Image (cartoon, rainbow over all chains, first blue to last red; front, side, top):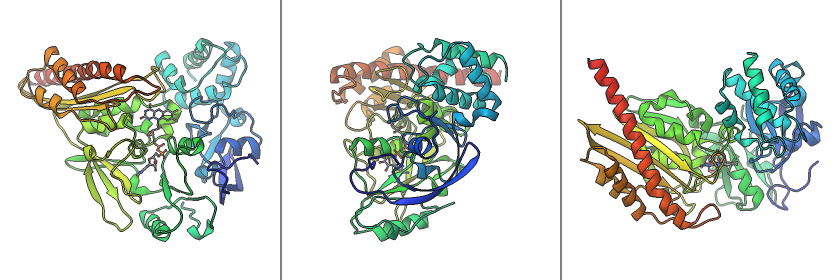
Length: 167
Length: 311
Ligand SMILES: Cc1cc2nc3c(=O)[nH]c(=O)nc-3n(C[C@H](O)[C@H](O)[C@H](O)COP(=O)(O)OP(=O)(O)OC[C@H]3O[C@@H](n4cnc5c(N)ncnc54)[C@H](O)[C@@H]3O)c2cc1C
């Protein structure tokens, strides 16, 4: 279990929660200050979820919470009670996310890979809201996903390739 | 849906989390905490609160999650006003039809807040509750004459004009047990509005200064105006002198520039890591003038449409 209580040295109370992750319901009794990102990584071993800044700035920990792109470092696991979470590990059966993964590989949009899961899930959420986003829409949606390797161009190209394939 | 463990479940020296499913449940929790050791903090999207708790800027021993309260959700329409639930995610405001033409400033302010992820999570009520003078919704709501509907555990609600909400740096008129339920926007037919923001980066950053304005013209003359600024003082400001200078005038570059100067005269921004006081003071007239110009263009295009229809 991850260290440090969020609110200092006092212990957090625990709550019983049920969260559906990648279509499987899990019931756990969790400290109320456990971040959703830590729950996914440490309890469920879903390591596609990356912890970067821990303050909602970098987008590496983005997951889909009830379908919406969400920074899992500033959401506590207890807040996801009764909700469903999708991480990149759950993308096997998702055609749109598969298409994004393939486009990322083909367009060379992955370098160190730390930002990739957050990028792909953010784009999946965007494309579900808007099937025909413009390049500007894509850039705006990715403003909260930092990448220090690619310079973004290849990531945007990968997204545009999926858009023009009309999935 | 609610899975409240009674407050008794959190004992002594530990931190608790409650998620009431109704205002009655919330009232019961607050009553049982009254006079106790714990000071409850309300939680909506957590994009300010969790960050502030982690950094140590705030301390809490009880967090009460408001997200399951139906009374704070959704959009309510009345004949003369629209009520936006405090829990509405900022992202949903970006394209909310209920805001009408006159509500464009709020749509623009929503689009300018944080990132896609943050806008999904952050709420309207949280943006106000946080009390920041740069909160993007703040200036827009002042320009739209918003009224806040507040709730207290004894059931005594009150309505507060948004201009009376801020009470100094980071301070609001909210009592410790008071909750923002809804933000009411009066229907303002014939008005137009605009919001502009300058931040350190083009996206994903708190404003250095933001400006929201609204205008109404009658026969080509400005009949009424609102000007609101964020980042221009300890609280969001409404420079009424700038508004007064506009009324009775025809929209023009000269009068908008004058309004911008008057807005800067009553501003008292501080210097911070984000920008110096001087930079803020030079931004204020520019953003005010540009926002007024934009709002005036929108009026003209509305009038054009009306004229076209009459013909
Ligand atoms: C990466 C990042 C970027 C950001 N960019 C911007 C930006 O560009 N512009 C901007 O304005 N803000 C920005 N913010 C700040 C934040 O996202 C907004 O202020 C947001 O609207 C807060 O809403 P919330 O629901 O997350 O509030 P919370 O964090 O849940 O709450 C904030 C405060 O309001 C109180 N509160 C919440 N709801 C209520 C209610 N209904 N009644 C009474 N009190 C209440 C809470 O007790 C708390 O004190 C950013 C934050 C992050 C992490």
